[in-house]
Length: 577
Ligand code: ATP
Ligand code: MG
Image (tube, rainbow, N blue to C red; front, side):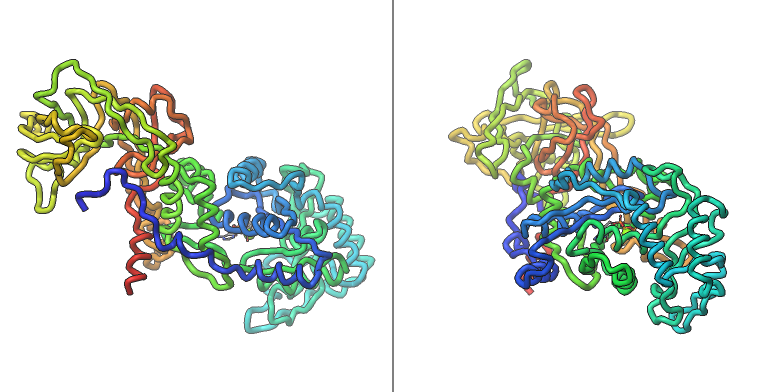
């Protein structure tokens, strides 16, 4: 444990060697193409509701929809399913567009909105009324619930079900004209109140709702339900494969019913299992609650599983796409270990992130035999994984900082780093030996370590072959820059955040130590003009990303992920079994 390789690079893992898991949806699309279905077209869409920021679960859906279109020479739309004005906002529309683009996908000019189809959807509704397939109902929400029945008992017909077509047409038109108060009437499909599938028990298609829509303003006071809007929107766009998550499997008969009654283009709906991650909530409702109740600093808090948060934390689009590839697409719900996501990030950053030295919790080291005022420039390797990234010069001088953790006054067995009378190598530099410890007389806290250096042991020089057990990182006190560093842990202590004793809820599992802020870190001077979003490996410590609020005078780094790869270990131990 004590002799981690100084470059700390992640080892190639078993996971990376395996091919991407098979994808049953890809097989369906390929087969459809072979059969000449849809005239050889493949057209998918990603249909977010703009009521929150996108998260890693959405990334799975985006990669799937856009990935299939790309693979089969088709197209994918970005469509906002914006049928619920009370929860939606243009802030979310803007963030969704930014995040899809950042993830690496492009919808060209195919940016669509269900709200653009409000007029068409209204006409579809009128057609269904005319055909005797929909009716205006005056039951209140509570009454409707009573009439609906249960999973084991059939429902009862609404007393308004047999209202004449003319009456329903008239009332529906007057609902639109604003003659009735919110919630007083609905338009319902006339299907079957005894259907075993509750979605088919005369579901609501339209409700009266006075809410200002972020796109259509106040021009409507009736809004289609998601269930009525979604399938028809797909149809209008000529979608061939309408891919959605498993909870919509039970809605499919309803969507099919609408399309069949209307006799319009019928996309094929295919359901897949949504992504669940350990230590993570992926429900927009819960994420919104975390934001509103200030458990996090915002949707882009680096602890959030949102794409905005992950980006700020240091995740790359490549790592996220790789993750989505590896988890595959299945029909059965399961939970993915978050260690696998972290593993994907390490693999990516290992190849690309420049190495630098940073000391998070500094303790001063004075090299007693190093000449005052002397400065040497040591040559450091920017990335051992990529020689093309070259080398840089690191200033070395008499006064340095090392990590508090790398020194123990009374070393336990197996501790091979610095301790009184013992030696350690400074990365790229010399072997030093601790010859004294100075403490604050009052507090007993270590103020500085007195050390000597062995001038014959410079890294790369002929005598440098002398071995010591540990190599530690350091920075030159005079040359280093101050920085704030934020270390993150999982936002939830339990693997399953919903696993709580009765009487409490998921919020009880919030990890109170998920953020640790270190105000007094020191980093190599090469980071003087590190720009927000740039990512580095701090040797032996992990991968760090420059925070968006960082500036030249006030550097701030977020730890994206540590170097310890629990996923690779898991894979290794599975192999041995
Ligand atoms: P909520 O969590 O509020 O039910 P949602 O996450 O389903 O909402 P949408 O905006 O409807 O939000 O999602 C857009 C698309 O992303 C949908 O096709 C949905 O099926 C898919 N999606 C959402 N969450 C996941 C997930 N965890 N894994 C895979 N796909 C998801
Ligand atoms: Mg949804």
